[in-house]
Image (cartoon, rainbow, N blue to C red):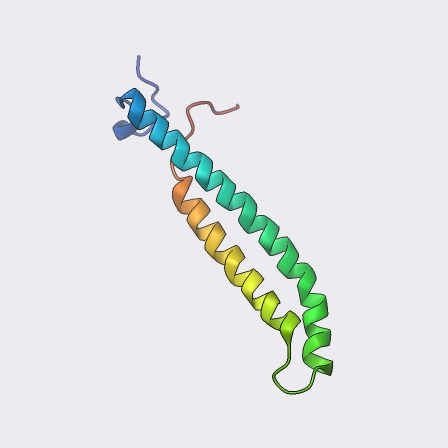
Length: 94
């Protein structure tokens, strides 16, 4: 009997298609992990970015730039992770 939790188009996949689906979901989980790590680092960098913006002269604000890059990377990783991990896993804990 087919697993009724799975979407209809995932119920009758070949072994190769299941392997590519699992690979896509594992890559999505990796991107989600990297996104949350970048978000934590960017949040911590915010403390030094405020000091950098206050005390650094002119356009020389390297920590503020790194903070912006870290937030952008976190956003990109999280969006791609959610996109790749979509769907339901075969084994769901109850």
